Image (cartoon, rainbow, N blue to C red):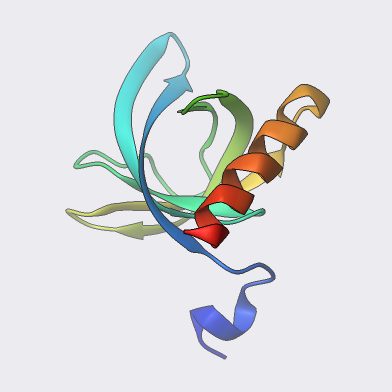
Length: 103
């Protein structure tokens, strides 16, 4: 089974800034694509497999999510799964995905 067959939700290409809060560090990165269940974070310095961190997607309505690193592409970034989307971030995330889906 390949990655596309395993995905539960469609992914949408985007270029949005994201802040990764890992311990006391705040790392700046970009998103390459996103879905309801995760995103690909473009960074030269990805975290390690299964690392958990908080991320803040910076768009018109910032979205806070808790993530788990599921895949690493050396020199490109990391694929992460959303393991928690707080209640106050669910609607802004849905709105963001809806806008991306509509082009």
